[in-house]
Amino acid sequence: MKAPKEKYAWTATVGEKGQIVIPKQARNVFGIKPGDTLLLLGDEKRGIAIPPKGAFAELFSIAFEEKSEE
Image (tube, rainbow, N blue to C red; front, side):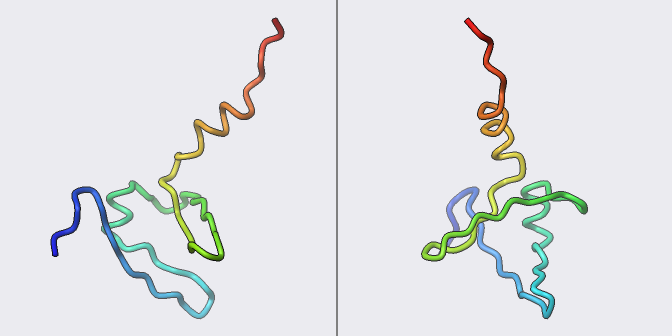
């Protein structure tokens, strides 16, 4: 079965300290570098998601921007 374009699946093993290693191909595809901070979203029914870094930067800037008084 061929994967759809721009869709990926990887596995990671959880170590004794609860850490996972993000596969090299995934780090390359998403531009994840050492020292980057990632946001993890969790839903007990749907699982854990790691959105692309910077995905929420625009949302946060909109939410916290100061509105000019008219």
